[in-house]
Length: 332
Ligand SMILES: Nc1nc2c(ncn2[C@@H]2O[C@H](COP(=O)(O)OP(=O)(O)OP(=O)(O)O)[C@@H](O)[C@H]2O)c(=O)[nH]1
Ligand SMILES: [Mg+2]
Image: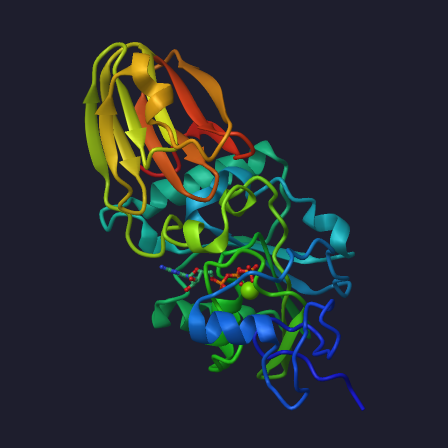
């Protein structure tokens, strides 16, 4: 008899409390951890998956990324996971960006980034898994690969892989949530004649789940449109974001546009910054210098984006263990 797997995360159901798919009763459809997440929004167990499952040679691989953290999109060695893979980059959660976003610019900017990393791919698709018309287009796109039998959804945690699986197959049994590393094992379903495989997320160490527990970080991760908030900062002025990030202008002045999940932001006195940062974390400082007058984007882990134009020098204070990058802006 085949092992029964949890409908929520794909883990093998087990009566052993040390296993990820632990349940008290093998007649249950969900493991204990998924049951608690589904019904009580509580998540204390489930470790993050680290293994990359084998991908059958010649398959179609949809590499899914949230539009929020495009800075790392082309850094994963996808080609190494199988041979003759047909790789398609899917930029999801487009609805998080302001409605006036210029998608042609976004697309060309992503292509430029792909070239920088010498990424090989069939296409780049911009979409929102929550929009039915985008899902319908994706269905037709997948079906246009006549010789393909297996389609894999691969990408970092929270990029929306399981949401896409559910939408493509009209089935909401698999759990979706901002819980990082929710899907534990491959979940396979039929879509027409194809097998669609939802893979556990590629584990990104230095995202917000690395420094906070689920109940804290779930309020920070954006799940709906990010409203830009503009600050006109002068030389040596500082803003404090959610008491854990600070941006200080070392040199230059002008507007800074922040995109976060309604996080509280206020101007503070730099001399007194240490006392205003939450004591729960150790902090590090990063200095960025912009010499030209192009628009740049600072991406803070999976939490938000700051836009700014040069020339400027700024210092960012963030909790130690979080990823941060500065690149030419992906959207305007
Ligand atoms: N606004 C918006 N939210 C989305 C979209 N796609 C997924 N989400 C949300 O993003 C969160 C993560 O979605 P999942 O489908 O669980 O992500 P995943 O890639 O399967 O994550 P792991 O299983 O942890 O690797 C959930 O809260 C989803 O509701 C989208 O297109 N737009
Ligand atoms: Mg998932």
